[in-house]
Length: 110
Image (cartoon, rainbow, N blue to C red):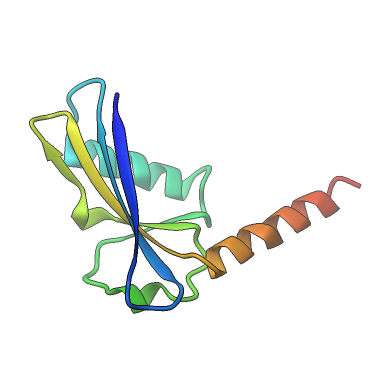
């Protein structure tokens, strides 16, 4: 499929928002997209990908340790294939946590 995305700096020092759009290869639904994200956030990407469905604002994500926090209520599917998702991230803290994870993983290689 085709895709397009934008990262938007919001009026908080460290938090940004990703507005990501893509054309799926087959028809899909909001539920299917969100379930795939939930499965990943509870499985292979646990601790890296977060999700939320509460009404939150940019400052709520300051110092969130996830690399990306997926906004479940913002998922949209138009005409079955055009999908829009949104995800927040703290561009300093999330990255720092991944660097820490990398250091721990490298230390275990000894």
